[in-house]
Image 1 (cartoon, rainbow over the protein chains, first blue to last red):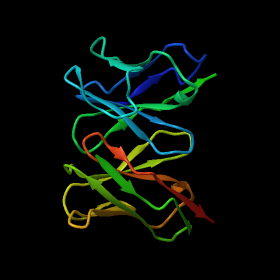
Image 2 (image 1 turned 90 degrees about the horizontal axis):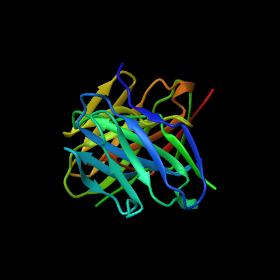
Image 3 (image 1 turned 90 degrees about the vertical axis):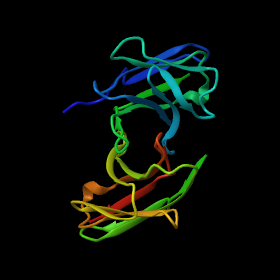
Image 4 (image 1 turned 135 degrees about the vertical axis):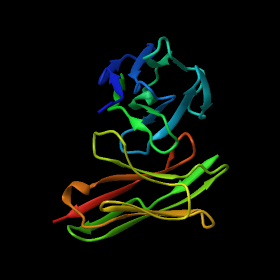
Length: 112
Length: 106
C-alpha cells in the first residue's frame, strides 16, 4: 500500500541552526501539507502546497519556515533558525481527493 | 478561520458504545473528517461527512448536522486497541480540533 515517508525519524539540532525535514508524498497525490504537534497537544496546520506553490499557511508558518518541492517526489520543510519552541513532531501529509489525507510517521525535532 | 471543540477525555469499557462530539466554526465548509492517533503514531483517517446524516464504516460511524455545525464519531463494540486520541477536522487543509483522548478499560 502506498505511504507517505518522512526522514529523518528523529532530528536533534542546536538552537539557531537550520534544519530540513524531508517527505516523499504518495506519487499520484496533488496536495501536500505540513503539520506540527507539540507533545500532548493537538495537530496544528502549518502549510498547504499545490501546483508547486503555497496555497495556504497558518500564523505559525512565519518567515523562519519555507517549503519546497525540489523534484517530482520530495517535499521539504526548512526551518531557518530553530528555536526551543520549535521542538515538536512534524507530520507531512498528502491527498488526492478531498476526503482523506495520508500522514507520514513524522519527524521528531528536538531543539537543544 | 476555523475553530473546533471536542471533549478532552472519554472513558468507556470494552464492548461499550461511545460517542465523541465535535462542534465547529468555519468559513467555507468542505466536510468534517475524523482521525485516530495512537500515542507516538501518525493520524490515520477514519471517516468523512460532506452531507448531513450518518456514515457507517464497520464499528465506526460518523454523523454530521451542517445546520448545527455539529458532528460526532460513534465507536461501537469498543476494544482495547481503540484507546487513542480522536480528532475532528474541517476545511481543505484539515484543521484539527483539540482531540479527545479515549481510554478503553477492561
